[in-house]
Length: 215
Image 1: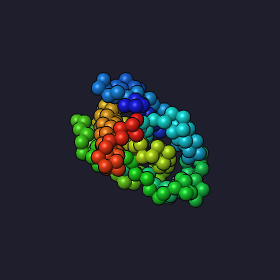
Image 2 (image 1 turned 90 degrees about the vertical axis):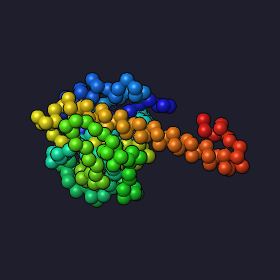
Image 3 (image 1 turned 60 degrees about the vertical axis):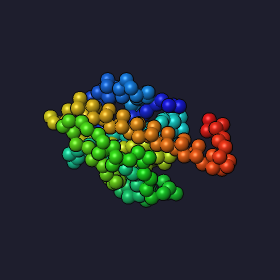
Image 4 (image 1 turned 90 degrees about the horizontal axis):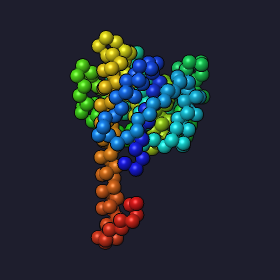
């Protein structure tokens, strides 16, 4: 990989989950560097931090993890929405007009197929589902911004509250497996894109490859 970094940004309230992920890593076979950061449930602060993350750090994949108190499963969100943010954050603030980016598209989808990942992941005792509606709160807002700045190289995972059936150790393992699958899919998509570019270059030069343009 050109830039072996995977950044996980969490806005859930449990340091134990962060500790589990830091301890587990992403496995010895995965050439990535996993780092964790915490984002507040604050629209304005999130907007500033997400912008800086993509401008300064340029992660290969940003995985956001947020709490859904009503969830019974781990939910992989496919897309972020631009409008409909009417609920106030922890500081009582609401985005003007309920909009994330005034000139942005209505929906931005992740480059990761959440349906594919949800079907492929298998962690005993953990249900994984996918969704196309992230809820129009700070998680969805964060996701939309990250997808916008990262050209789709972001993901949002909604997790249920910790419980006896889902302790931090099991949730950490599930997140590890899910992120591994996401990175694998991104790498496959990247490889396929390079192949397509090679084919297009061959076609444009009447069968002669122009390999230097791929560097």
